[in-house]
Length: 97
Length: 130
Image 1 (tube, rainbow over the protein chains, first blue to last red):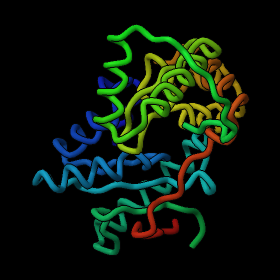
Image 2 (cartoon, one colour):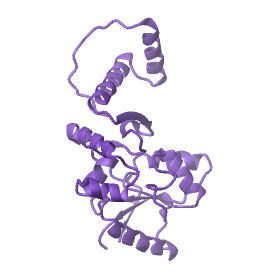
Image 3 (cartoon, chains in turn orange, cyan):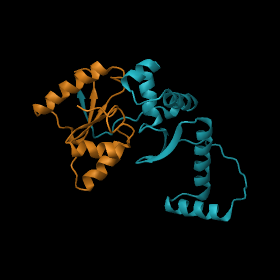
Image 4 (tube, rainbow over the protein chains, first blue to last red):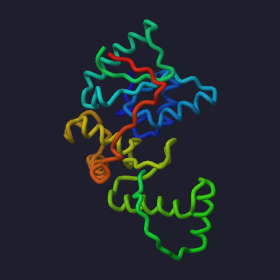
């Protein structure tokens, strides 16, 4: 897992972050997918297949709840590993099963 | 960016080259010159009122951003609220941020609370509960 904050990508625009995630085969996780969705569509059209986009629901998690977010992402990653979910068309991550 | 729906008529004299550029921009973006002037003035007024806020093109239109960051105002607002409005906590988790950047977004958000909300995910996103 790589956080934008504190990395070389801090301060970069959304397109640069999405391209970096795609180049590194990473799934993009964000609270705000508003800008990423159209960018992702453009990327797919240009022949790049992004690994996926995950929106963390701000109603379920808040940015200060890092432990909760991390735990949710780890569980989510395990489900991807098991083939239970596919993030390539977009996922909204919420709390409660 | 939302503009007030109430409109007042005014006339103004503009330098020829500025008007030409405005019309060129308006045609290129399928807007009227009046709409472009409104947008430009609104952004200018906001940037005077809230130093540290600038407007950028996004895939969904013009939006206010926090200068020196890649974050829009609603994103910084979410962080500010998420960390219980505590600057020391924000600084700990986001060492790249400056206090002035957070303050700028907060001031803007307080003036335009309707612009602090994040959108829902698109309907085709799969909801995963964890």
